[in-house]
Image (cartoon, rainbow, N blue to C red; front, side, top):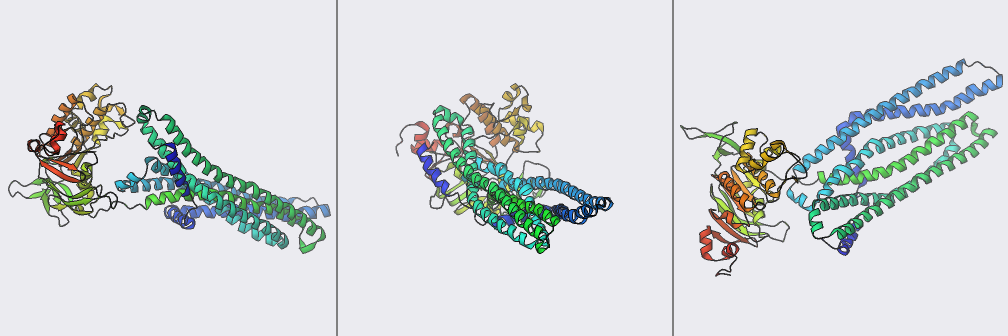
Length: 637
């Protein structure tokens, strides 16, 4: 774990990356295409309802002029108390207001539907896309940062789509309608309002620009903090055993302080904006009242008392949308920062898969020996090419002059050539970091090779559909992962259509049945926290059972028994041997006693095969394998 000073320097460098969004308008337009592509009709209806609501408000404000000039003032002058015409006019306005209320209510319901539906579809699209990303993406992005996309960034988008954008649409239509109404009432007073409004727009631009930088940095800091918390939670045992609690708290404080700094400055600038614009709105109101009073009293420009009252009402209604726009722009900046991160996920290049060859279950005709595809699950498999021709799946896997590097310029495997004949058990041994797991990652096409070829039954694996290639290769990894759910469901994860009897048979094969039966709820026992209630050995046996129920044509076992005690290992090994019968199997093992019966053992160092042969042959050579197996220095050392 890096020390506090190292983290501080690295975090300072990360802070420099916090900057304004690149191409915010482009991100906004892409988001709008996203929303309207899903709910264009519904959003159009919402906009129409917003217009109806605003019209009702504007029409109501204009009614003050009519009310005062055409009803109240004439009644006061003539002492005529006939309220009939006035009540009729009020009834008309009441109907307009009622229409506005109904339109506002319906638009609120539609906005909620659009927002939640959009979030649901976006999350689905994000998750579906994420499932198609190569492992390299998850190697370079922390789980906490990825989780932040589904929580924090999605939430900022929710606020933007459901509140900010409709509010801005509302404000824009309000400003336009009110502006025309004010011009109709008094051009000089409209000029006064526009001058003050111009100052408000300028302040909005300045403050939004400053806050936008920090809102973007805030989103990044949230992801970094979530990633650190997730990392510390999963590594609590390591933290405690090395008494690193103080250093962990110090590192957390630094990340938390960085988030505080970005959030504080973002909200400080955005917080200034509302009060400043509100005060400017009051200034506009007072100026219009003074100038308008003078104009009305002196009869200049034909402004009447009713017109002045209506205009002053419009001043409040005009400056309020500008203030609302300024406030919502901060939410939009936050939403665009979240959208930018989400779009970067969606823009990640998915795994390429041009393979046309598929794995099919086949049946051999007893008379002709011809293979035919069948929907029934049989013990025989075949590769069906793009031309429809089926060849038997035998398990002949070959690497021919394969070179590979995770990072360009840092070669991991050097011109490697090896093969596994059908049904053979191939063991890969060597020091940590020698490249053993990398070989299995290439066979499964978790990564693509730089040069050379890998063939499966004579077919280049690049020509095999990835899902079918991986379906043919059952895997048991050193790092066991169990999902929340029952033990039965976790084993069935290997093959979702497996029956309960097949799951139990697989558990017996892995010698997991005995301990499962002793659990309070047996196979219905619920697992949480990656199976934290089970021992590491028990979790490993469930992983082996999961591979067994898949019944794959070939196997890859990466330290499959590394966490099992010697007594349990002998039981599991018997089941493993039964599982490996007739299957081409690659075994990575540090516990060399488990691979003595391998058909071929390959000793790998620094990405090269330095020895190969059977156990007895390699012991006789007294080379690197002899040293690893006996702990003694061999003749060739």
